[in-house]
Length: 593
Image 1 (tube, rainbow, N blue to C red):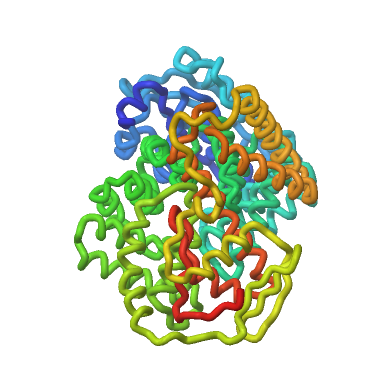
Image 2: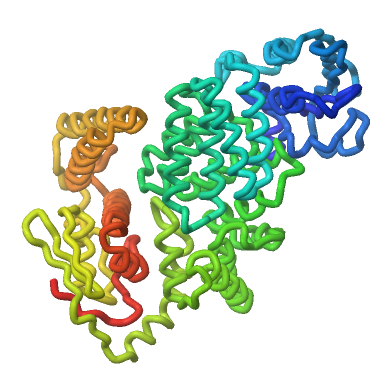
C-alpha cells in the first residue's frame, strides 16, 4: 500500500490548536482539551482522515509554514474568547488548503457546561460540509458524545494529559484523576479506559517486577470499560494486546479488528494494532497500518521507528528494517529491540554490527530482566524466545539457532552436572515435581506431558507434531465426511462466541470449562481434516500443532511459577518452543521421570 494511494481515497483534515484570547491562568481543562476532542470525533468517520495532534500541537495559525508538511485538504482552526465569568465565544473556521479559501465560519456563545454539546455541533457542521467526500453509509461509529458530569470529564482530561508524559510517576498521578472521575460518575467508561492505559504504560515500559500486576490491571480495567461502552476503541486495542500475550490469538485478533473498525484513523492506536498484527502473522497488513499512521501523523514521535523496524524485519526486508532501526535515538525503547536489530544484521551477513547490537541487548537484559546480576548469552536468548508471543514462525528463528550453536557446543564439552533431587512424576491426576530440594504437587495439564517428553530427550529437537501425538495424513485420504466437518465448525464458532461472552462477564469457572471443550474439539478436528473442508495439508496441521504445544507449555510453566518459582524459571530458561521444541539446560540434569 503506497501513501499516495491512501491519500487519494480520503479527505484529510488538520485541527489546529484553538487559540485562547484573554486570561489563560484559570482556564478550565475542558477548554484546553477541546482541540483533542475534536480530533477524536472527526477520526471516527471512515473516509475522513485527521492529522494527529502530535503533528499540529506546535502550529499557531493557518499561515504557519509547517502546514505544508502535513499534506492536508482542509484546516480547522478557531479560538475561545471569554464573554463573562462563565460564558465563552467559540469561533470556528474551515479553510481549504489548495487555495487558502475560507469554506465555513461560525460562532457559538456557550457556557462552560455546554461546551461538550458544542463539540457535537461543530463536528456535525464540518462533516455536513464535507459530506460529498465522506461515505456516511460506512460510518465506523455512530457518533455520539457521552453524557458525563463536567467535573468527571475534567479529571479525565487531566489524567490523559499526564499519561502523555510516559513516566511511571505521571502514570500514577493520572490514575488518581481517573479514580476521582469514577467517584463522581461510576458509569464513565473512559475513566476505566484511562486506568487501563496507566497500567498498560507500565506493562509496555517493561517494569518486569510488576509485569503480571500491570498486565492484569490493563486487562481488567479495559474489560470494565467495554462493559459500559462496547465501542471504546482504545480499550478494545488494549484487550487485543493483553490477550495476545496470554496466548489467546483468536480473541486477540477479534478485539484488535473491532478496535480498528471503531476508529480507523487514530495514528497512535494504528501503531499499537500494527505491532500486535505482526505477532499474529499479518506483517503485510501491519505495514499498511504503519503507512497510514505516517500519513495521519507526519511529525510523529521516534517510537514509530522501532515499530517500523520490527514490521519490516518480519516482512523479510532487512535493509529497510535496519534503516529504521538506525533512526532510533533510544535503543532501550523495549528490552529486546536491539536483539531484533542484531537479527536483521545477521540476515544481512554483517556480523560486526550484529555483535554490536547483541552486546547492547545483553546489557539491557542484565539491567531490566536480571536486576543487574550477570547473565549468560543462553539466558538472554531463551528469555527472548519465551517472551515474544508469535502465533507462527518468525524470522528470528535462524538467528536464534545461530546464537545457540556456540552454547550447544559448550554443553557437549562439559562433564555432566546432576541434580540428584530432580523429578517429574505423574501420579494419577496429580504430578509430583521436585527440584532444588523443593517439592510441589500440581494438577494434571497437557503442558506437563509435553514438558516431560522434552526432559526425557535433552538437547534433542523434537517436532511439535510428535508432542501433539498427531500424524500428517497423505493427500487424498478422507478422514471425515462433509456433514461432520460442518457440525464441528459450527460448534467451534458457537464455543468461541460463548467464550468471549463469558470472559467479558468475568465468569471464570465457565471460561475454564468452555476453553477445555474448545481445545478438545480443535485437537480432534486438526487430526481428521482441515478447517476448509479439504484434506488437511502439512502446513495447516503444523501450524495448529505448533501453536497448541507452545500455548500448553507456556501455560503449564506459568501455573508453576507460584507453586515452584525455581523450577518454573529453570524450565523457562531451558525450553524452546516452536516448530521444533527442545530442552537445553545450561548444565545437564538428571531427571527421575
